[in-house]
Length: 147
Image 1 (tube, one colour):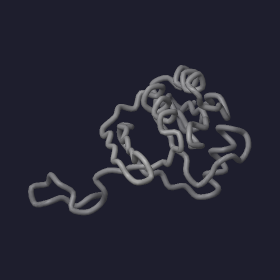
Image 2 (cartoon, helix red, strand yellow):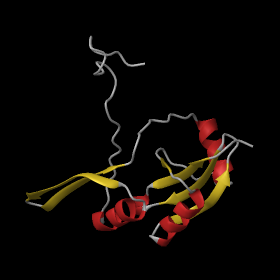
Image 3 (cartoon, rainbow, N blue to C red):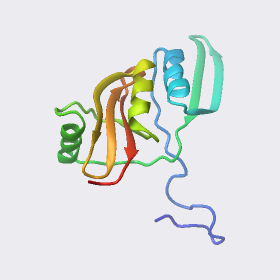
């Protein structure tokens, strides 16, 4: 729970935004995937000329952000349920989508590698595991009713 100012509107502790920063050697390919294929709208697009060339940052709106912290047994459980074997690294991005089957097909057609197809989880979601540009592990998940 965040503290708020006396007016109750602005947080005085905690974060106002979670921003995951990913280095992409081929920024155009990453933009074509995350912006164009997955539909994450640009919030900011800045370029700066440097001695090393054009430095560019593009911030994409991914909706509501959360920080999900898991221990090793939970990571192993998720891998087993979604993929059937250990594949996780220290960071994986999970994006909620309206239709996991359609979003997965579109993502794969747009350059993602499918690690595992959409799979029903016991906690009420349909999860697909992918690897996106820049080697970023992805889960596309659709909230459904638990079994």
